[in-house]
Each structure stands twice: as C-alpha cells, then as structure tokens.
Length: 300
Ligand code: SF4
Image (cartoon, rainbow, N blue to C red):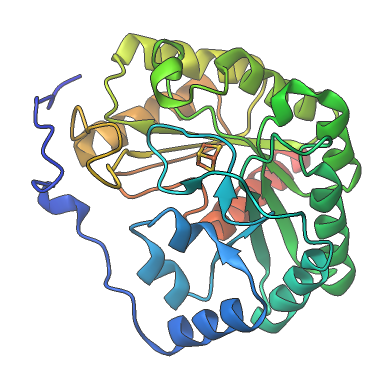
C-alpha cells in the first residue's frame, strides 16, 4: 500500500490521529449515569480515542457481563482474568440507562465469558429484550463474541432479535494467532454467515496497521462480501500500551478513502473508513444510512 513506513513508536502518532479531549456537559451526565447504574463501557475500558467526541454526543457503547475478559487479544486494553459471577440485574439497569439517555440507537457489547456454560448468551438475550421493552423506538446493535462456535448460544442471542448483528473479524487470517489467539477467522466468518442466514443485518470491523498486506485485506473483503456482510468499518490500530502489539504502519487518510471506495464497489452496503473509525463510532449514523439505502433499494 502506498504511504507505508516502519514506524513502530506509539509516541509518534501522525497529526491526523488527534482526538477530542473528554469534557462537556453531556459527557459529565453520561459519566454520572454509568456510575449510578453500575455499567461498564467499552469506550472507557478499551481506552477508545473517540470517547470525548462520542460521549459529548450522548453516545456510549455499553459493555455487559463485566469488565474482565477470559481472553487476551494482543491489541485489546480490556483486563484479562477471572471475571466475577454473571449479574442478572444488569439487563434491567442497561434498559433503564438507555431510556434515560433517550437513545435512538444503542450499541451493546460484552467481554468474552468462555468460562460460562452458555458463554453469557442468556444475559445477552435478556438484555436485548429488556432494552426493547423499555425503549421500543430504539434500534439495538449488538457487538457479540464468537461464543467459541457454540451455535446454540449465537441463536439464543439472535432469538432476542437485535436490529444489527456486529461481530468483528479484526484482522487478516495470517495475523489471527498473534492478534486474537483464542479466536479464529473462519469461526468469525461463520458467526456472520449464520446471522445473515437468519435474515439479520450484519456488520464487521477490521483494524489496519498491524502488518496486514493489501492483497490479504482485499481477500478478506471478498470473503465478507461472499457471505453478504452489510456494513464494514475500517480504522487505524492504536497500541494501548507497550505491552500490546506494536503499530506496524500508519495508514494515511487517503488510503482509508481509497479502501472505502474499493469496499463499496465490491458490494458492501455501507463502509466507514478513516483513521479514528472504530466498530461503534457513529454507529447511529451507519444504521440510519443502511436503513435509508435498503429502503431506497426496496422502492426501486
Ligand atoms: S475477546 Fe474482546 S474484550 Fe476480550 S480481549 Fe479480545 S477484544 Fe478484548
């Protein structure tokens, strides 16, 4: 890809990666709500660079099933360890927080809970239903784990009928062992394929700058198009700490724009592609855009 360099120094981010400093009234309100409802957000736990901007827009990605993960992905800032017991009061608290925030679109995600017999899928399903009951007008996007390929767990979540099924492939197959040692590329494709088979709008995300080659990336695009994934997001990988995988390349905004054009030509319905794009970044707009496009298509 043009624009490649060998900079692996986390301190030397290029100028296009400056994010908004957290602050402001809506940010403070959201912070208070997260505290009073004993919620976790992936924004804070994963040290997302967009936290300031998103929270100021009144948007947060709620993380259920605790803030300790049973996996140890090489890029992720979320703590690895032994999580506390599943909290069956959590679905009602999430539903209430969404109601207070008055969200049109909510993104819910979770850590991986591989130690639980059902992978946490029962709490997932209860959360979706509770949010729906309390907020019938809110569209619900779920960013789910792979449930170790236990498909009955995936179907338990799908039975609760979220609006968008999001599962991240994160990177190209050759980097999976390094980036997501307890996951698998084929398994992730299967999560998306099975969800689409049941009629869900599907979405996935890829981080760039971990050492992927462009031909591998385009092959992943094709694999995703083949299983009819609707929404693709592409963003720059940022190293959360020196203990995480190094950045291999800063992808330029021009390259992100070029890859977006390629993705749309290949057949994705929506592609968000820019250095600071994350899986949940502007998810409300992506969802609206996708709905508009599909409605438009149906009318033709
Ligand atoms: S499974 Fe998800 S939350 Fe857990 S370490 Fe990997 S990316 Fe982070």
